[in-house]
Image (cartoon, rainbow, N blue to C red; front, top):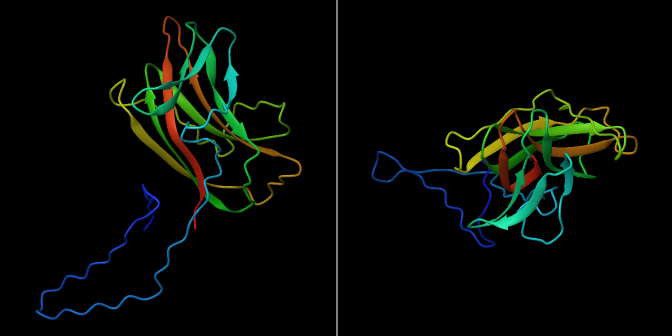
Length: 190
């Protein structure tokens, strides 16, 4: 069972239910493990900004819309792309992680991608597992949760490569899409 506590203090209860008057239950090897979020400022609470990925003329601002979240407005025009990215995360070869976030798409789609690139200057618009998804929310303007599990390649070498999370929105002709993201995390699956 995986869960993320919403507070520093929490209570874990395991209930046993039986048909008989005196049911018995035996529990063994119960443990609680904490996994560290590898994303810095995934809750958008800190003043430090994510790196921008943007077409010139794109507004990228942090707003408080009932909670701190990041919004990207993509200027109108086919092929215009904007978004945010974060790199230098400490991921290990062969380990499995979960990417999780809340998102809201104003129009068209948003696309989270996990990249392994040659250097910080090399921008590769391709997901290393070919699992990038064009995400939309069922109702524009409504928050939705997205998550994905991925395993780092066994030959990944952090001394030679950069692991990067990019979250992009792409404009189509005649549209000015926007997307919102909050509560972004990448955590090792224990």
